[in-house]
Amino acid sequence: MIGYAPGQDVGPLEEWPLDNPASDYVIQRGAPRTYGRIDAGGPGHETRFGIWHCTAGAFDCTEQGDELMTILEGACRLTEHATGETRDLAAGDSLFVRDGSRVTWDVANSVTKVFLGHKPDGY
Image (cartoon, rainbow, N blue to C red; front, side, top):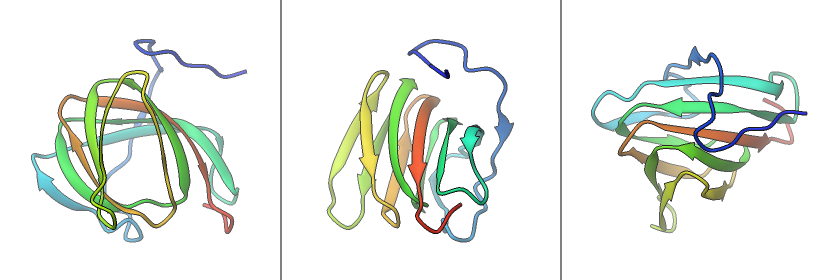
């Protein structure tokens, strides 16, 4: 069983550069850096589960896979471009984002999330 709680140490993470062409990252503010780890699933699988961490800054990207996320620490604002809907998220908040959604991540403080993603054609 794998479990995480707000404020809990999630263990070591590796750098995940904002350079995936499919995500089409565009930095809007600062120099955000991202880190993560896949705890289950991953390349070749339809489903993946893991941890993601981002330092302060803002960027646009296209989400890769349907994703349910829960914020473990920090704060951010997520804006979906198609609808203009904006959500402020902090520790304990959860959000579902659809595959292919173009979003802006505006990270006020470093943020860490746990996520469960699904992509029918695999990651």
